[in-house]
Image (cartoon, rainbow, N blue to C red; front, side, top):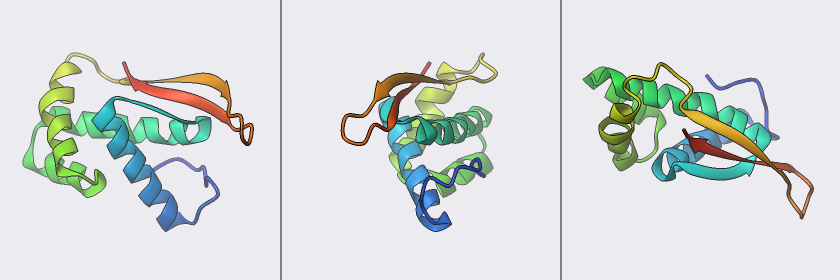
Length: 113
């Protein structure tokens, strides 16, 4: 379950947004978003990579229940998980980059280490 940030959305919309952002983040490896969204995305992305490290059918199905695209789940299990095999956590990095010009929201870059 994600953290306690509401992000100005009802639960179903918030979960759909987080699932989609985690999927896009794992696909591209880097994403620019607000700080609060980045802090919500990071633990979920790390959990998906940790599931990929176990390499069982049950963990693959559990990842597919959260990740919205099968090709991204395949990438997590076959490319990202072996890359972080000897690392026990901390697969993501959140770096603040300043305020957005339109509404002054604090922005951050989240990337795979």
